[in-house]
Length: 622
Image (cartoon, rainbow, N blue to C red; front, side, top):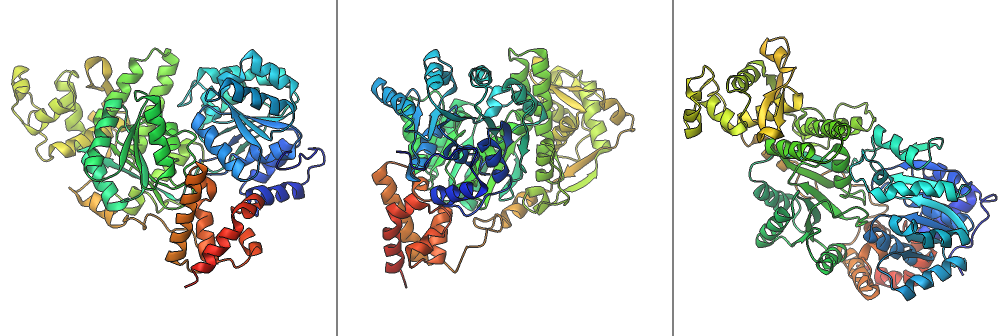
């Protein structure tokens, strides 16, 4: 018997949808376009949904799966995503399960039996499993409510996480033409969106595009000096005891950074594909189930992780694109509370990413698109204007206000000065030295440092030797990065990062092109941001739904939740989200009816935990 009686989609009404929304998910209303999407899919329509992480994408296919006859099939690329979502649905009384490589033959056979018997509301399947002849034949015998293709950007070669197995999902439209298909992603620019629609046969389907803005996330990008030390200071000063994710490009760096954080007293664990699968699973489980764990990882970690209380995401290396940056930073603050996206960035990051693109086996067209995406990300890192505006603009979204009030550039606006002369000095130095040298050597020439290499090439005899003594090395590096971001210089990966002039450099050298450069007084910028960004002051938190929460009650509720989660073998947020704990602590319900009115308390959770929660509230009355 299913947890929620299947409703004939032809007769499903807005009242039916709201009733199930309340009884199963404990929610009193929809957010944004959720209700339109639910109605459209419930009525048998196909669609493409773009909604930011934490914006409620899952509900857009979970609810129609309960409203339509049959079982909703969810295509998901990661086992962790399946496990988390199934655990949450099961807690809410929904008959949901997975069909993936973690199951034994007997377990998989039982899942297949339940599907054919009509005993499942939702079934999560990996794309490679779904496309096997056995699975397609199985689905052909079952009653299917819908197909939900999650993380749909994986189908696009222009996306940041292309997975070849996703291309085969075009077969769903051919084999099951009458079953509605909903493709969902948190990250897709116009090019990626177009390819998703084409590959999944959704060209004629409506697109529902929510705002990409995550106002609770503070964006901050700092000049990379000693990145690991900068990270330790960032965590200790602003996020001590918080859960966080740190991204690094290489496995070796992941190991080194995790060890350094641990030595500094910050509970940090490494995660990358080179670790034994059991170690990765253990580290991921600790991150999900314990408070205050920091995961240091390659991009192999995070997609599909539903942990709502990640307070910061840090990058010690430049991502490949704005899509990747947005996807990764979006793992912070899924609960809507103040969170941070922090990145340390330097010129070497541009050179490294450009080299990776040039050395890839992709086509020339792919490399051109990749370089364009990298340039857009560098422009975000170097902008002197609102970072949120730049980020949203990349996805085609505009803001009417000039300042978001929650990024480093808006909180501490950088001073800008006419940098034409500095730019001309640097570009002249690049030209006079033959466009064959990297940043370090060019700066040595500019500041008049007589190194062995400078003497070897007689660059101390050049007219540009020593003409830049007004700036120090760090300041010249900032000028270099900004000229690369403006497109007047490019890093040549074929020449070990040598900087070369672009066509636009001619206008600067002739004095025809204006150059405005960001000016950063030594140490002042980071101090200013830090003074405004102490833990708990990152952004105004949402108002509590009721009165003032008792710290003792809040602690008792969290302790109870931890124990229940331990006993059930699920993450604490699967039992109750932080926002639900906050609501109970603030409202202090005396009865089950009052408890039922708190967001996140559905019928099954009220049945399972109601009496115990009321007892905890009453025993912490003081």
